[in-house]
Length: 438
Image 1 (cartoon, rainbow, N blue to C red):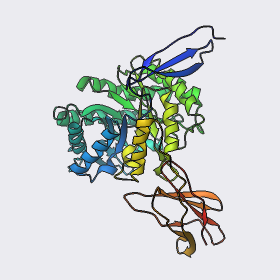
Image 2 (cartoon, rainbow, N blue to C red):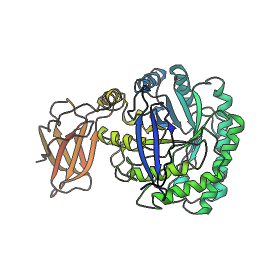
Image 3 (cartoon, rainbow, N blue to C red):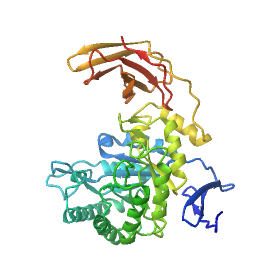
């Protein structure tokens, strides 16, 4: 029996769904949703996507406009482009805009192409500041991290001078590129260092562009570090020490694509993170849904993505993804991904697809680099790629990218004694019967 009812109504970004919570004596939240009458659709969908510099390095203005049109067609209004300045693992610094922060003059102007096209197409861009790949080694001290934040402030200064007046609508917000996890920030000391680093940027950004919100997107892994409740407490402590402003955005990765979380425990982590966000008045809570499968760096089946959307939507005020341009764009992968997603946005249901036809035949032979598996495709209809099995275990998924249909795979770890099979899969995740490679 509930001793009392606490009802917290949180209007979603698309003004379509309210969140309702009932809390018992132990503070457990039970989540319910109901559609706001006559206020659009309650279908969980993406409002924006990340895009990384390496993908867009060679895009011309026409390609940028095509991608922006595609995002608008899918109902998106945000693009997160990062980073503006990168220091690689060898210490080399590059930028995607003309900068005085590098030893060599940078001719790369991809950031301006992005902002120019976004301004034209009504897309709002969160610009990623700086990143140093040493971050992943976790071998730095507080002084080094604060130096990186000061570099980020210099990047922001340059970008405001270069682009804010020129592209006032497109240059909408900042992205804090440093991805925090639940393993290396569990002590109070590390949390205080993290808060000081965030404040170094937050306070400066408030001075030079107070109207531009800052977004960060941490990740979690249930196999290491603290559990969901401990992760929530970690962020509660960090939020208590940071100068986040009303409108800043906490957008954790759902981590399903990378394997850090799964469809069974996703709700628990976002439930605890929501409790943490609720302790910081004005801080927005968004969800960053992963549309990839990191095991093979392929697009995630849309049936899985739909489930991710539905789960995360129960806790957040807005949904973005990593990353539509990389894993769902018709200019990169099978256009059926985009078309199926558009149907989902219209109806709330993915298209009904038959199980794909199996390959005509498959062959195997020993080559210098291992065991080569090859196959002859059947009809191209509803084909997105091929699953390769060794001794009845999935070892690889190969996907159609840039219009290229894979027909062979070399298994460097295989031997002539292994049994190989090939299956066909489609964009929603259905797979054909396996064909043994002879």
